[in-house]
Length: 389
Ligand code: LMR
Image (cartoon, rainbow, N blue to C red; front, side, top):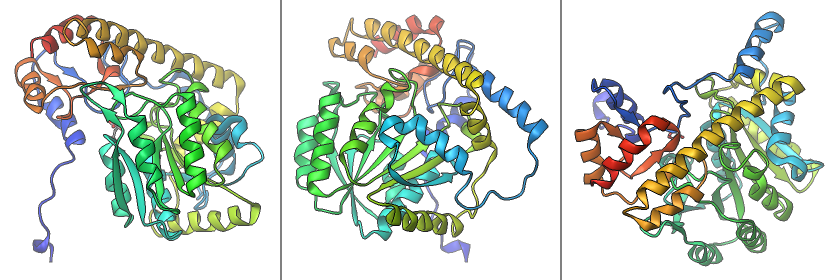
């Protein structure tokens, strides 16, 4: 039977992990997959995560199933962190999911069940966005979001495209720290797009995966919170991979804000049903860690402090990188004002391959760089190699 299957291409982003690992050259630089690294190149476990894990080892009473919805205490605490005041008092259905990707898939499946046939996606986007939407049977409609050579958000074109969307269409938005461009909407633009979404009866799905890495925990959720205040219904996919450094624990959640309690109850049933026929019950270790941290003021304060230090490190690398690159490409001063781990540099694929082959600098063919993969000591050399393209 299996002989009928066609060979699948490797996921280009994940394939980079293997290519980088297999490169024996000293001084190689990994600007590939979106994982935070410190000045030694390590992806640290947050101090608060370690402390919460120790506490769980001592006190967790059972490993019995938590049920398809997951732990309501975790879901409440994470929602408060994400939605803040905008979430308070809202009728919301919630589901603990295997990471942010699991949340996106459940959201896409739910959209399909509501009769949504088409979802609008700004380009460029994280490649898995379109793949997940399509896997859920949804059609993907695209519009230009970012002009790479000009390093500029194409807000007017985005609004123009969404003005042509039909009622019931979905719209996928990045809350902040846009992947792959690092370019975000400002407060007025969030308000304008939220009003358009409400006026046209569109269903927004917001992906929030890098909260705390851009301008700060609340700042990175501000646009999402504006949207939640304006639109009657929304889906929100939350990842704890980066914000809590829990990548491999697959920790996340999906939320649906609903018009009333009865609707929220019905959506909750669909969430649980979708989970049941997919992975049945969510993994719990990472969620228990997050819930422990957010429920303990001392652990929460320590987690915020460590996250803020990571954010500052990225900002300082961004500034140095932007200053160096703007010596040749004036437009790349914009890199300093972009947010989160990523920027999308205007490199041709041949240039990316040259950097990889000649200088052991790794990034995806698109020219996206993970700034968190760069150590301070490497910035000047990497800038020189970029300038030599
Ligand atoms: C990335 O974009 O590098 C991360 O979100 C990792 C992934 O799953 O692609």
